[in-house]
Structure formats: structure tokens, C-alpha cells
Image (cartoon, rainbow, N blue to C red; front, top):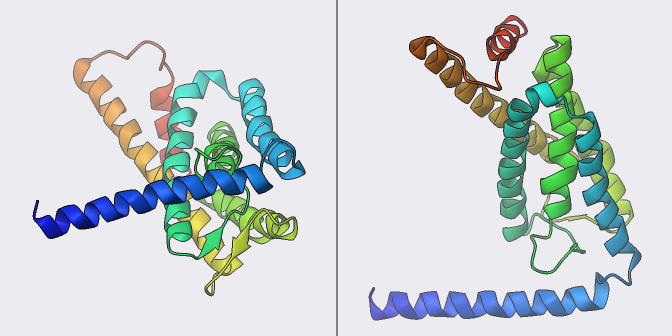
Length: 213
């Protein structure tokens, strides 16, 4: 590295440490376990995961879980982009060492879309229409409700339509990635002449997906 590059990296590192320290101080003042916001965030984080444990279709757990993990990853990226560039903010964190949007990105949104994905698989429905409807629900009802209770803020020209597009974008990308890996799995089974244990119905799921496109 050049001296100028090394100096700039060190400056960025020191700023990141400063931000982490300031975040912890802010959390101790406004978002600690003695506040109602902390317990609200905790419930929003825990309850969807508990519901998932009881209502997840265990025959399709790997497929649905892979899809849900995609939702989590891509929604985290979108939230990081929005917060880093000042388009929105979450004034309260569950814990200071976690991303401020962890409740939304790691539990509430992924679990909701996993249920939609599971339901469309079982019922043979078109995923994209129901994903668009759920995206509308989050963008036009959930996020405004969070704003009302001071748990979410929007800045710099952001609006619910752009939020809806971001939710739908994440759902579609996650579905496409899941479909790609599912087709690779099926193709691999065909080449090997046998099915992997634990995925006995994967061909039927794929055929169903083709019919409801």
C-alpha cells in the first residue's frame, strides 16, 4: 500500500471504532432493556421465529429455509445501502453490536416471505403475485406503523412506493436464486441416477413451480 492509502484506511478504521463507541453510548441511553422499545423489538424478533418453528413444513424445510436465508441476506444488503446513504434509519437497536435493522432483516421479513413461499408451493399458486401483495403490506402498512411508533424514519425523498419496490426486488431475486439451485439439484440427481436422502419430493416441487410460472 502507498502511504496515502495506508493513512486513509487507518482514518476509516478509527472512524468505524468511533461510530461503534457512539452507537453503544446511544443504545445505553435510548434502547437498553429498561425501555419499551427494546422489548418491542425483542418480541418482533422472537415471535416470528417461534411461529416458524411450529408452522414450518418440515418436509420442505431445506428448500424453504434456503429461500428464507436469501431473503435475509438480500434484505440486509438493501437496508445497509439505505442506512449508509441516509435514506432511512432505525432509531432503536435490539443490541448495539448487531445491525440496526436486524429485527426486520433476520426475523420479521424473512419469516413472512417464507410462509408465502411455503403456501404457494403447497397450493400451487403463483408466487410473484402473493409476494407483490406481501410487499405492499410491508411497505404501506408495516413501515408506516413503525414510523408512527418511532421505530423507523425515512429521509431524502424516500417514500413507500420505493420501499415496496425494494421488498419486491428482494423477493424476486431470492426466488430466482432458489430456483437456480433447485434446478441444479434436480439436474444432478438425473445425472447420478439417484436421489439424495431427505429430498424425495424435489422433482414434484420443481414440476409444480414450472406449472405456476
